[in-house]
Structures are given as C-alpha cells and as structure tokens.
Length: 626
Image (cartoon, rainbow, N blue to C red):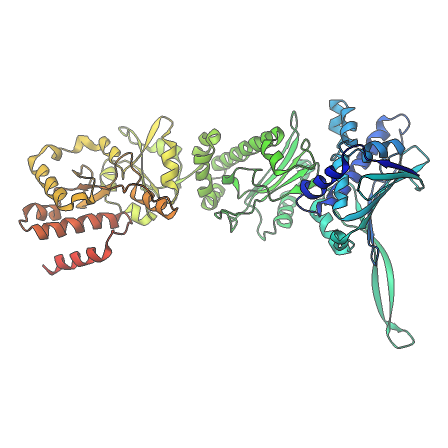
C-alpha cells in the first residue's frame, strides 16, 4: 500500500471546494454522475480511435446503490474507460489537475466536436467530501487486467494499492458523514437524479431492497410474512429532447415536455428551438407561456430558464441567462463550452455565456416579429400578456431597441385594441409632423381628455399610453424612423397647431389670462390661451422638460419625491362660458373660487386628485349655491 500526500496545498483547497465553491451540497451527486458519464464518453470515443481498444464492446451504464444502518454508504459505479495507477495519481492526487481537460487538449477540433465530454474531473470529484468522511475509488482501465484502489479522508493524504474489479470502469464509495446521511435513501436519490441528471445520455440504474408484506402467508405468531425483494430500475430518461432534431419532434412532444418541466397545465403559446454550431455551440429551447407567470411583475421573480452544460443540469435560479424584460420566457439553454462548475460570477463575465445570451435575445425578438407578421391573432394574445415587460426593454436594452420598437404595442384614439408604431406611421395625415401620444391614468380617462379634441379635428391619431411605466419608457425613445414622439399633455406639442390660433394676439385674451393667473398665484407655472380645446374650459399640461403630473406621482410612490414641486401650466379656452364668467366678474372672492375649481377640475380630468379635496368640494358647493 502506498501512502502519499496530495501535491497541492490540499487542506486549503479542499476547504475552498467543500465550503465555498458550491452553494448547495446536493450537487455532489450531479458531479459524480457527470464524471461517470464522462468516462463512458471517453471509452466510446477510444473504442473508435485507439488501436488497442478498437471494437471494444460494452453496454454503457451508471449504477447507484446505498447501504443503511450504522455505516451508511453511497456507491456510484460506471463501466467506462477507468483509471490505472498513474491516472489515479494524476487525476485524484492533484486537485488542480483535470483528466477531462488533459484529454480534451489532446483532441483536434473535429474530434472535440464528437467526443461530447462532460465536466472537469479534478474539481467535481472532491465535492464528494461535502457529504462523506471517507471516499474510496476502485478503478480498472479498459484493456488492462489490474485494478487499483484509491482512498482518502480528504485531510492531506491518500492511499493507493492494487485491488480487484470484474470489468473496466470506476466504482466510487462514499462513507457518508452527518451532512450526507439523507442521501442513503431511495427517494432522495431518485429526486436528485431527476433534477440534475435526467438527461444524461446513459441509463442510470438504482439498486435497492423493497419490503413486501404477504397477507396470505403467516408466521408462527400469526403475523403476515415480510420479504425483501432486490430491485434494479432505471431512474433517468437518458434522453434530452432539446438535443433531438427538430424534424423528428412533433408539437405534442414539445407541449408535453413543456408541461412536465414547467408544471403548467396549459400548452405554451409557442416555442422556439435553436441548435447553433460554429465558434460557440449550444442548444436553446424556449417556450412562451399562454398566460403570464404570476410573479412576472415582482422584483423577486423566479427565472424560468434552466442552464445545462452538455445535458447536465446546472441551475434554474440565475437571472443572468436572459435580460430582465424577457423574464416570462421558459425553457433551456444547453452549452457545449461552459465549465461544469460554472458560478454566478463566471456567468456574468464569461464570453461564451455572453455570446449565447446575445444570440438568444436576437432569436427571441426575431421570432416575435415573425409571429406579429404571419400570425396577428397569436401575437395579439402574446401582447395582451407581455406588452409591459417588452416596453421595459426599450429603456434597458439599447442594442435591441429598434427591434423592440417594432414589437411593442399601444392603444389608440383611432381604433380599439393595440396598434404598432409602424401602423400608426402608415396612417399619419399628410401634414402631420410628429407622432402624438398622451400618458396618464386609465384608458377611459385618457380617451376622454379635453386635449384630444383639436387633434381629432385635424385627423391626427393619438397613442393612448395608460401603462404606469409609459412616461418613463416613451421619454427615452425620442424618435421613431426620424419622427419625434410628442406628448400632447406637454406644452411643446402645441406648436404643430398654432396656425389655427388667432386668439393669442387679442387684448381680450391677454386680459382674461392675466386675471386667472393672478387668482391662482403660485398654484400654476403659467396660464396660456389654448389653441386645441374645443368643448372644455381648461386643461393642465406641463412644460416640455418637466415630468408629467402622473410621473411626479410615480416618483413620489418610489420614494423619489425629494424634488422641487413641478407646477402645471393651465391652458384655457377663452370661448368657454365659464371663462367668460371669470372675465365678466367683478367679485374677487367669486373669481378666486371659480379659478381654483377650474384648475382642480382640469386635474381631475387628467386622473389626478386635487391637492386639497376638502377645499375643492367647499368651493364647488359655494359656487353651486350661488
């Protein structure tokens, strides 16, 4: 028996691997199963390329078994390539070394494509010490007669000696510690394999004893006789649907897979299956749920995309896989090039992951656009569920903003339902200079806004933006195909209607404006004659560079109300009877009440409560009493 010390500062490295590298101890089984799958891949490849092993025949499989009682163990066995004395020393004696990494380095690019190796053996193997006080490895290399046994407690040294094994392959036995007792359990092992390794390409078998009670046969005391039946059953599907060719899959296959993996009772609205080859190899299978996930608008939403590396499950709790505005997407990303022990930091910085993410976003947006053109009915359903998060992308994803501008939809003063910016542009009047929109409260309130009258009269369509984020989003767009977007509840948009406004130059108008302005004082930023009011006495707007009244409310609700109060501009219709009454009145108190109610009514028309509702009702009551 050889007693050897690890070649690296093993105590420090093992502490790092066991306590820091992995956030979840249960993934040790994923690592060991992946190593076994790796060994099977190697033997399959070697049987085709190695002269000594050509034609080597074997039925690839991975076996799990466990023992209960005082000494609890868990055994993972494979009939793959196996290791000899030197391999065990190199791969398990030096933690930083990786058998798979060395094996890959010896292959040409074309060979790498076919070898389909999983993981890096050196680091993954040592995750076993998270749940084991001692680990034994018995391995026999294919084509050799002698097996070797490696044993260690992970505390600085290991032993190596000759042993016996009937065939090629590796058997790893974990002597479970207190942290690992729960894994000497049939149900726990089945659940973990289903979660992490269900799609590994080889069958995984679990051996266990099942107790049977025979009520027909009794013992001497009259009790039913109990017998133990030894069972061996496959516990993984050993097939990754997303790895199969799209031509051999049916819509039923996709829908069934979606329901089984997402626990949704409904079929998805549609799915997108991509198999990319080239500098970066990966497969993606994305589903769009028929209904938005219940937590879609929560800050702590649960991501719906799972990350696999060569069919091995890595995580489903990583928000870096897709941008936040695509958080409703469900599905799988399976990379050929990421390391198996990928961490959050690696995902954020890794060029491969960045390339996959970027390509996936473009693929998703491209598919959304295709459906909008070819299947408007389906796209209407899609927009009904996911219009809001797509709008968020306009603010956060500048690189894809042009694509998103074609995808988002808005309500309109011209028709029911949703319209696109492209369709709005096609319908624009010949003399129209801008795309007009109004933001604020609910759709009904906005469509009843007094501001719309003049635009309807000129045949100008106005986009009705009743989403609470529209003020933020649309302000960041600026232009669409060289057309500026103008909010009609801001002062700048009035310029396009000025040619219809002869009232601004009259002395009578100036006199009315001055009187109202004096009555309101510092409640308003300015009072101006309106060129666009038809049937209403007044309306409130804000200066072009000021946040709208609704935006101010949003900022306050977000705890960002520590800004100087933005006062509205009051536009008045000098032909309205109420304005005429103000002009004719010589009663200062009456005029003050009338102007104050005029302002509060204009705010209410925008869906905004007056600052002092009690004062408003008192003044309104006083005016009605007269």
